[in-house]
Image (tube, rainbow, N blue to C red):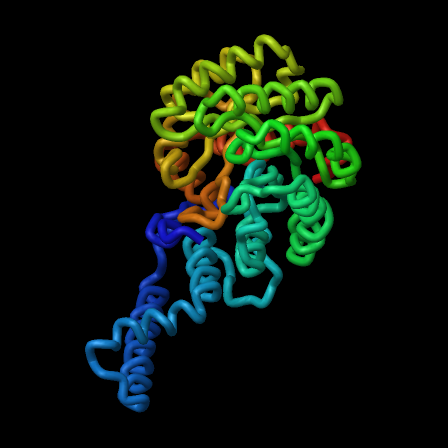
Length: 358
């Protein structure tokens, strides 16, 4: 989980008013902090840890229990009125959330538990680059099999519904020959009960081969009437990449209701909306901060707008949608608008596939 998660103040995800924590509550945390400090100091002395290594020792202790600490803080921050001492399974009053673009293959089971407790009831995972380019078609097919079989079972263990989209990711799209070999054998995986379509496709460096691969996969999605997640490039490649993507969409002419142009920023969102597709905002380091995403929702409205975390193995946060809920409330956006972006819109978009059941 990204480090930014616990530094930010997250407003309640329930439809209740915030209240100031009682004095007794603050006193308890003070005593807890002092007790932990005494325990950690005594432990260091007992184990004869040199004073200059104490900070590393404390960090290790916190790391060992980070999931429990995060869960406690999330409960306290999101639901100050809730009895979070109870042993119940989660947050009964949470606003339901669907993350339509996240890479759970790179996340832990502890994070599945946290997501479920925080109100995330379903996720959609597009195919992703594994960290090194795959050299064989079978490697892609093995990853498709994982996303369509093992990952839904892993998520179900925590009460989260997991769906996927399959494709050759733009990061590996330069190898056109390999892409063709993969696409020749992709059909059986697209028929899996939790596979909703093609994705993520699009551009990475805006090369001719990437554009060719993008066009080929967009045509495949259009021919089969499948959902499609289209990613825009990062950084200085984003604006010219968005222009290429818009041109290819116009030429291929897929059903716009079934496509989302993702990773939009302020400089590309208008062009993305002009394509007629859904637009996606990704709260992720290097993409959008929660406050930036909230401002775009405020300025461009909620119609056909999706919000996601795209959390992967990098510095990212599977609870980024919740942090953005806090940012939207800080800007005094209506609760109905917030719920539209995190629940109704992704449910409507993904629900166009008969396989999606939430």
